[in-house]
Length: 365
Image (tube, rainbow, N blue to C red; front, side, top):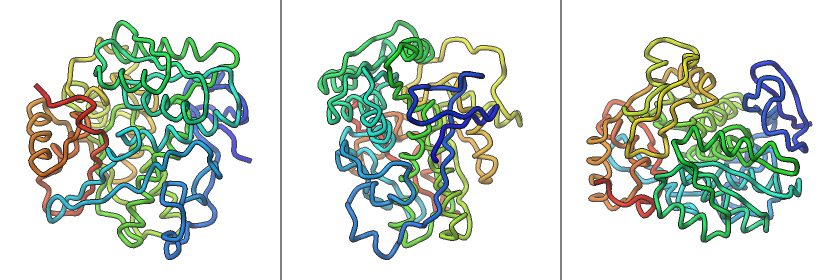
């Protein structure tokens, strides 16, 4: 039976419960779920043209809340660097991969309300899928969130709560609301179903590349949900004998807010206990997370893969956004971070996600 399990102390809980975190340590859940049957590469083309075609690898099946998410194009940018166009998702960001899993789970549990917190894209995705599932939804965002993102959240019918302060203050407000009875916390950080949605990013690469993966996967990291999904997928594909080697995970952060990169360079297994100050401003608002709850897991995943952390400056982000636009891709400022970091690589193959549409933030000033 699929169950929640705490990676820190082994506490377990039924996935039918609305317990959004470990009751002992208040940390995020993992999912006790194992893929035993490989998705059949040669017959995938005959299946539904969405991420649900990898049903053997997913902890939920037969969804009713799907908006056709997944199966985004893979396009070469240079001789060694390719881009996966996840900004072509239904809500214009990669967060749809995980949001559909959370909301499908919520639909089956029939809560009184759904709560989410976000710097914009995850909240937008949860709002859209809750609209699809006819679930009441409240989304908490920090002040200063892109007006286009807040407009999109409201358009889907969600109640919007704008929280004074930074992303950390927003998360705390949402978690307080999540403790109310009858509430499903659609947390892209604490609920592992989200990670099992984002892992389909790698399953799609594996299919599109004919049963192989590139030498490296560059991923923007704030809370680390795409990176941890990628780590899940590469581990599963390797365990099933579907790939010979796991690619290196290249985690990219904005230099202005890079706590994980600092911990990695200090050879630390976790972030320091000292609470950080307010996050510095950065164009990459989607990854401006000063204290990600899954920090320990992110650092371990990068090290296990033989990868590393890279940081990019605000000027590099501006230049990368303009460079991609000149190539025909209008991408939001967070979504260009990986291109800024590895766009010049020539010694190995690497895929970068263009994970949010430029219309969400506009051009960097």
